[in-house]
Amino acid sequence: MYDPTPAAVESALDNELHFVLALGGFALRIAGATLVTHERLPSPRFNFVAVHDVAPARQTAFFERALDHYFQRAIRPTFRLRPPVPAHLAAALRQLGLRPRADPLDLLRDAGGRSEAPPLGPAVRAASPSDLDAVCAFWTTERERPEFRSALEVAWMHPNPGERMRPVLAFNERGAVSAALVYERGCAAGIYAVATRADARGQGAASALVAFARSAEFGASPGGASIFATSPRLRARLEKLGFALAASFVEYDLPRDAELAIPPAGPPSPPRWRPPRGS
Image (cartoon, rainbow, N blue to C red; front, side):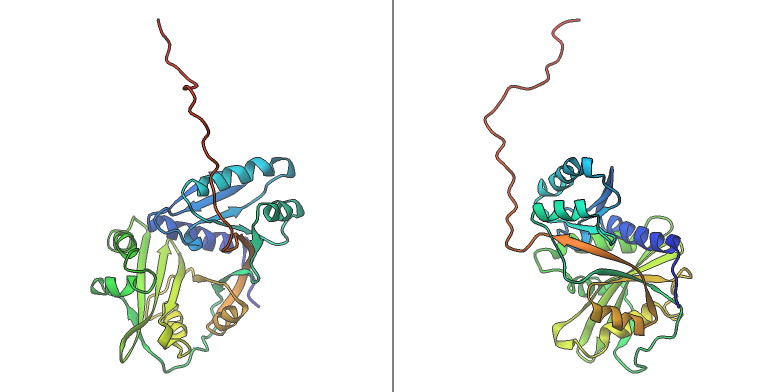
């Protein structure tokens, strides 16, 4: 049975954090949490609060500070907590209108077992620079694509020392049908943003792609890869590919019909600070 060490879990979470940074995001550490933010990619996948420890007497100031950070940017963040969620934090999140998602966010790591992926399936290979536009098309609309394309091109073609971004593509007779991003930093690797075209789902493209990303042919990281699952069904598929559960999280987010509103600034007022008038 796979028994991940706390260090292995932290390594995987650190890889995820640096994946966001590599694509142009940033992280702000405050007392009790890390605020992961990407102003150009407003998806919850790039904008979340990793909550660590917050005392009941400090939670009001904590939530005000965290939410203000995102609401000023018109971003809806998710709050990620390890179960069991402390009662005072669960109550505060609900009072703020956030609700826990039905399924946990599961972090899985390569357990070194044999993959049960079917031997026959779509052809899979590492993407080449000429595939950049095809890769970006899996996650963005035409309006959002230039920003994401620029960020991915920089991370892919001009990585910082010790890191590497490698897009992977799966093909059938009609062209690219599935894609993912493999981000490596040090000895750790993460498989992110696995996406499949709607007309090609259920045909094993994503499974073949993930199996390839952890294979010797791809040159997988010696530290093993990690990947996230957002549903029990996806987790079961990944376990058949040789991954095992390392950690679970409860995610809180705002319902789609919740409105984000910043209160008016009020009437103009004189500056609160003035330079000295004399020596």
